[in-house]
Image (cartoon, rainbow, N blue to C red; front, top):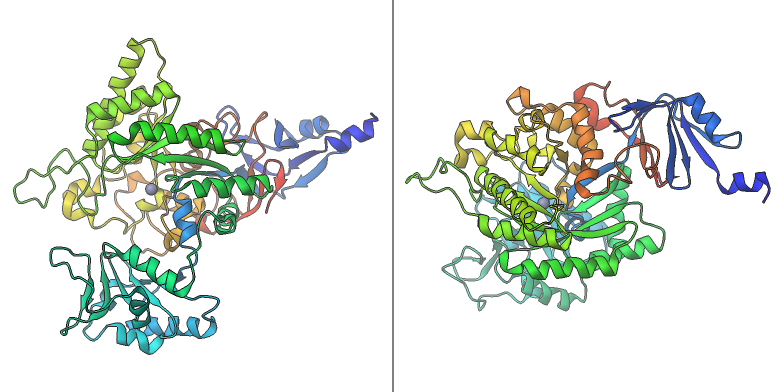
Length: 564
Ligand SMILES: [Zn+2]
């Protein structure tokens, strides 16, 4: 083989003229990268890189811009976003009345044939605008009557439907009304459905199925790769190459991702998690993870994690806390957990024996302590049985933690995940009622965690298309750094919990890779790793804090190829 041929076959690319932030603590910055095929061969000085790459190398001049490793979002709900991407979204701004909103929906309906959009799911109407008397299905009908229309309120606890929708769902005065439930279709004074649906009525989904049958249409499903792809493309536009699904909602998700991979259209690493709702599902979850990994596991797909919700949310008082909720008149309600410490210990032992990992949703300080206790005991018992403990125990959210427990995280090798967008000024205000002022102010104390040496990592945890814009890591970095979202006026106290830009960047890249068990290939820019990177429009360390979210990943490279 001639020299010329071999250099063409092994065409090297040199990225130069850049401020390259590597995510590698040994060499945090470098001048140039040499890339061949999917991999980084060299990271270091520009002259040495050019010598190393040789005459024929393709030079990419980054024009003095900042280059970073591609981001990893270690907790996001891909399927839920994909499923909801067809919703009609109202712009986030102030509205004077529901009529103003309905007029906007009418304009959309007038310009969109029924054949193209046979059902309009609109969200979300500010809750208070739905409270005025005289709001019912007849008002809805004045704006849209040629097809079903649903307008959801901002809390997703109540929706208003037009008459066409009720008719197609076959809901009328004969539909049973359950006096003992808050989930019902509202009634007017004559007992006729008025158009409201409260708490997603218990059999709303069955009624929706009836409607879909009647109109001969089905909402987009994640089993269709074309439904998943636009969500992945948005992630690419934000510079995200690694995704850990909040949990894998169906096998259809895996089928779609696999199809995209086979077609060469997947520019992501997909990490799936199998949901385990309670202790009795442990063995099934283990089996499912192994089955899915065997069937779908590949260079870009991995299903080696179980997801479990240990408690609920601080905003509606379903977290597990050490001191009782502030608003409990009897002063003894400390919330509940979905598993005991003993059960959780068994979960950790079994996962360790099967070579699997776990991400646990928890928000209260009692859940946090329980998870640490269980991990400590499982590690000891596995060691006593002669087995190394290699299961990654990854605690997501950790909104409320005690200082003495934070000290235990690093020695136990526990992984911590947080969603920095929540540290924005106004998020989760409802938690104040349950936690009281002082505890509320101590939430999201991640600098206290970082101080103990823990590598806190970050994610978006977006659950549908409405808050999908918050999945952009550069927005997350701004929120974590400023404790405020761009459209908010007030920052969340206390100021000393503003996380540094460097820590946020580490947490969105190499620390996430470590928690995912993928740090041998991704998360930093160094020789031997995959060439996944972003060329940013501006230097993340130099722009004013409130402009971080305006930085654009101008070019995004996935495995050696610019995909944007
Ligand atoms: Zn989640």
